[in-house]
Length: 128
Image 1 (cartoon, rainbow, N blue to C red):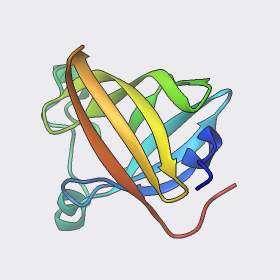
Image 2: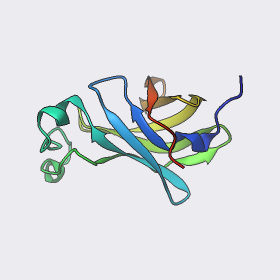
Image 3: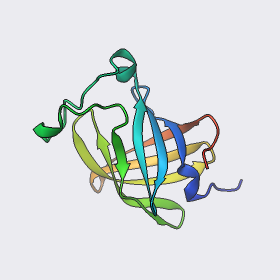
Image 4: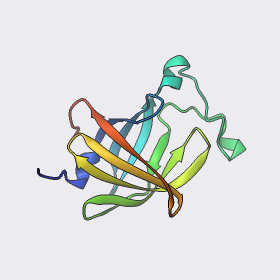
């Protein structure tokens, strides 16, 4: 089976939890990802970032909030970036690795080895 290229991360992805939909796009030489939908946003489209550790950011909307940023492409993965978790208001170091054309693995770590890995599934067709 051929492996997917790192640039294949561009597109819309369903997260493992809370019905999240994240849209990953090229951002200069990096990639970034914004939250476009979730179970919470479906129930309340005006949902705010109330759990942010920075009180001054708690009134910002979650819809279209950038969750993934700062990644550098290294061989078969994107690394050196961060993922923001709106559930606990924390930002974590992260890596993204394509499993195949329709699945990616996102690993977020507080500090090594305290990491959590999720497999996200592509929604719809690839965006180029």
